[in-house]
Amino acid sequence: MIKKHAVILGLLAISTIFVTSSQLLAQQASGFSGDMIALNDQPSDSTLEYQKWRVTLINSLGFNGGQTRSTTAKYSINIIGGIHGGLDGREFGLLYNIEEYYVRGFQLAGGANVSGGDMMGMNVAGLTNISQGSMAGLQVSGITNISNNSMSGLQLAGLVNASMQEISGFHMAGLANVSNDDLSGLQLSAGLNISNEDIEGLNLAGLINIANDDIEGLTLAGISNISAEDQSGLIFSSFGNISGSSLEGLVMTGGVNLSKDVQSGLMFSGLANLSTEIEGLSISGGFTASQELNGLAISPLNVSKQANGLQVGLINYAQEINGASFGLISWYGNGRKNVDLRYSDGGFIDMGFTTGTHRLYNQLSVGYNPLTADYFKVGVAAGFVIDARDRFKRVEANDLTITHEIAYYEYLTEEFDERNEKQLSYRFLMSKLLNEQMSIYFGPSLNLMYGIEDSSGDLLWYSPLSLNVRESQFDMWVGFNVGIRLFKQEKLPLLGDQPFVTFD
Image 1 (cartoon, one colour):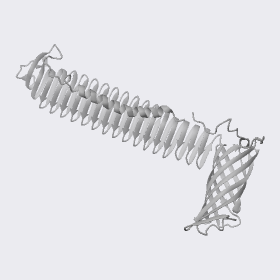
Image 2 (spheres, helix red, strand yellow):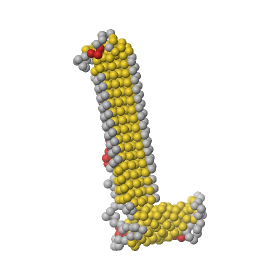
Image 3 (cartoon, one colour):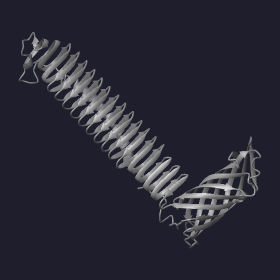
Image 4 (cartoon, helix red, strand yellow):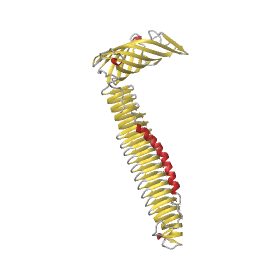
């Protein structure tokens, strides 16, 4: 069955967005309070000399003497650029503001704001904000925000936000958000969100979200989401979701969902779902391939080594199936591969190629009427087979079966041109297994044919019920079928003993 934790993960991911947003707002509200942009009369570092005003022409050359590297200030003005000890207030620089120990407050520079220690508060630079320690608060730069430690709060960069440790909060970059540790919160990038550890929260990238470990939460990428380990939550990309371990939750892509171990939850892809094991619901516009399928796979081509559940597609394949399938051809190592020869009312002799499981089969067929060689028919059918003892208590033999079959036919001329007639049929067939290679069957059918008016007379022996609606004609009749089925067949267990579809 589709695992409950997939739905829970999706709900948790949505909750994470709102929780993270609330936390960010709280951090920003407190971060830009008097704690970060403090105008205190005391230095944060007692080893530095406190100055209320500090005016510098360039580097340490200024109006307060040449020892500004040992000072911190409440107000600092760098006419060209300044190199100082610290900042406990506000600083303005035409080109750069450099503090050797820490920055605590507000900085504005045409070029760069640089701190040899932590950078806290609001820092605005035309080019870059650089901190050897942690970076917290609001940092805005035309090119990069770089921290040799952690980065938290709100960081906006024209190109890159980069941290040697974790990044948390709200980060927007024209090119990439890069973290050597965790990346958490809300990350917006026109290019990449890259983390050497986990990516958590809401991550939007024009190209790729990349994590060397987990990606959790709501993650969107223009091309791919790539993780060396797990991805869980709501994962969206236009090209591919790729994980070195597991994909879990609601995962959607226009291209490929690829994981080394397990895909579980709801998987949607425009091209393919590929994994060692797929659990839950897998829908793909191209194909689904896995070593083991536990659940429901819907795609034009479904391929598994072990299929436990249901495969729906044009072509279904597995070395072994414990479940069922719907399709044109369902080829299984432990399934049926039969040829049917059938005679039905109207004088048609049908030959069908029957595949699928021994309980539920698919059939492709072609029919020909030797009395009138002007046309033939092609069709598809699906049949459900049960042991006769499941319906009739007095039956004791274990080689009698009942089949409910639904079929659809198109009639063609001998030149392979399509005629107007289409036919729907339901058959109730009784079958006797003669040996493992042959069975015979017979039974009635209920048929409906529709086409243009007065076109079906040469196809029917009789039509007790005929109805004309506008230019269309509908004919209904009860027919008969008798046939023989060749090649390997098996006796079926009772329905109460073994269900024909299982979901782990």
